[in-house]
Structures are given as structure tokens and as C-alpha cells.
Amino acid sequence: MNRRIGRLGGIEGNQRLTEALALVLLVLLAVESATTLDLSAYLAAHIFLGLLLLPAVSLKLASTGWRATRYYTGAADYRSKGPPSLLLRLLAPPLVAATVVLFATGVAFLVTGRGGGLLLTLHAASFAVWGAIMAVHVLSYLRRVLSDGLADWQPQRALPGARLRQTLLFGSLVAGAALALATLPSQSTWRSHHHDHHHDRGRSAHSESG
Image 1 (cartoon, rainbow, N blue to C red):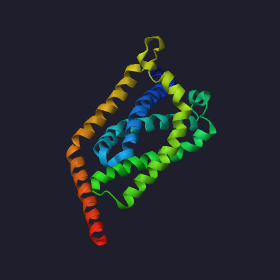
Image 2 (image 1 turned 30 degrees about the vertical axis):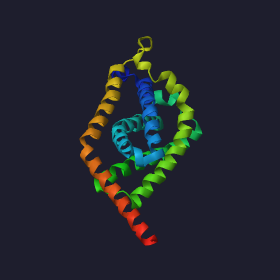
Image 3 (image 1 turned 180 degrees about the vertical axis):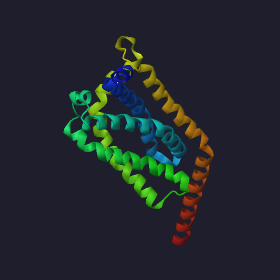
Image 4 (image 1 turned 90 degrees about the vertical axis):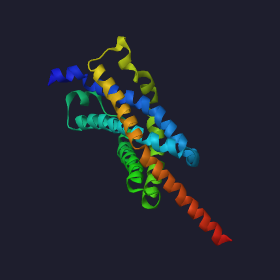
């Protein structure tokens, strides 16, 4: 078991994977969030990016979840590293819950073909919660992510398991791109339905006012 941990980099390897993912997600999630400023113009990009992000976000949740599990089950190396600050520990459960609901409802839009109702309410509410907590999360970890996010690509900072972590990172992005590209027809159909639905509502409201 110790040899396996040594090959994978142990807790330091887990942290490097988490920070490399965080660095990539910092950029992609910023772009995704920016599309919400004008969804009527950027809805296609919003949906495509959301699907592309899904595997990488899932991997990030898995890496942080693994560390939390190892810490709270008493693994010596994880306990010696210590926990995050109390504030970040308190914010972690709602952040994870908001992230899961945000992406799950986004996928549910495409699966059900619906664009409003309870799904929209949950999607909008989870985005508001996610955004507020994520701002604190980013500010707390930004310096470390910028400093260590590329550590596995720096030969002088070599650590066992670097190739595996790089593969996981790139693999999650490739899987996300494949998912987004494979569902392009569904995305197009949903956008057309969404556009027609809002157009019909607007026409009905105009008729009633007239």
C-alpha cells in the first residue's frame, strides 16, 4: 500500500491534481459565468461549455472528496497536513450541493426538453448560491492555485504520479469535449424549442395587451 501511495504522490499528488484542475476550471468557469450576462446571445456557448465542464468538475469533486474522506477517517498523512480553515470547511457542503444541483439541472434541461418551471428555479437559485460561495473559495485559494497549478509541468518540482495526473486532467477535458460535441443535436433542438416557446409567450402577451 505504501508503495502505491509513493507512486501516486500521496497527499501531495492529490493536492497537485486538485490545483491543476482548479487552474483550468478557473478560466473555463469564468467564461461560462460571463455567458450569463447575455444568455439570449450566448446560450449556445453556455450550454456547450456547461457540458464540456462536467467531467472536469466531477473529477475536482472526486479529488477534494477523497482528501476530505481520508482526513475524517483518520489517515495519518492527511491528518498531518491539517484541515482547511473553519470557514472553508463550513462552506464546503453547500458549495458541493450547489455545484451538483447547478450541473444536474443543466443536464436535465436537455434530457427533459424543458426550459422553465421548477428546473429553471433550481438552476437559477443554485447558480446564485454557487457564485457567492465560489467567490470566497477562489479568493482563499487563488494564490496557491496560481503558484502550484502547473507544478506537474515543472521538472524541478517532480513528484511521483505526474503523468497519471496529467492524463486525468486532459482526459476529463477530452471527455467533456466529446460529450458536448456528441450532444450538439440535442442542444440545437432544445435551443429551438426554448426560442419558439419564448417567442410564443411574447406574442401572446403582446396580443393580450393589445
